[in-house]
Length: 175
Image (cartoon, rainbow, N blue to C red; front, side, top):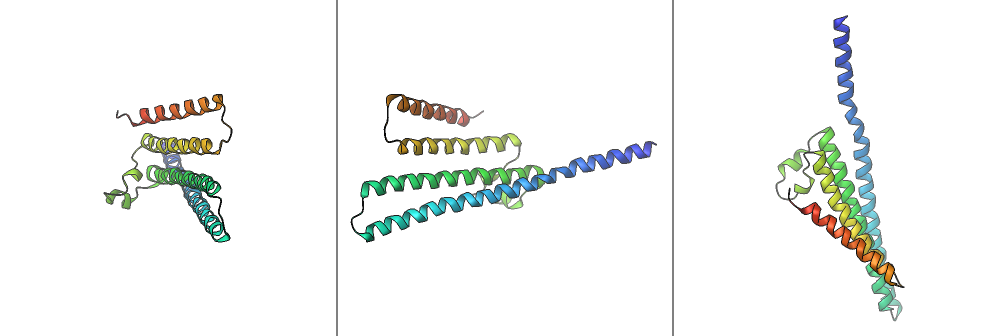
C-alpha cells in the first residue's frame, strides 16, 4: 500500500510539473498578437505615406489636414508598436519563467537586457512600464483628436496625464 501511495504522489507531482507547459499556448498567442500589432502599425504608416503622396501628386494638398492626419496615424502606429512590445515581453517572459531559459537572451550582453526576466515581479514591472507608455500615447492621441475643448475636459486630461506621470515616476524609483 505504501508503494502505491508513493507512486501516486510521484505521478501527481509529475503531472503538476508538466502542466506548466499549457502556458505555451499563451506564449504563442502573445507572439502572434505582437506580430499582428506590428503589421497594423506598419499598415497605418504605409497608408499615410500613400495618402500624402497621392495628395501631393493630385494637385494642391491641404497641408493642415495632412498634418493632423499624419500625427494621428503616427501616434496610432506608435501605440500599436508599444502594445506589440508589451505582448512580446509578456510572451518571452512567460516562456522564460515557466517553460525554459532562452540561451540567446542570456548570451547577448548588449541588446537583450529588457528581455532578460528572472522573476514574475520583474515581468510585471517591465510590462507595467510599457503599459504606462501606452497610456501616455493614448492620452496624447486623445488630446490631438479633440476639436472643441472646454475647461472641464482640458482639466480632466491634464489631471490624467499628471497621474500617469506620477505613476511612471514612482515606477522608476530604485528600491
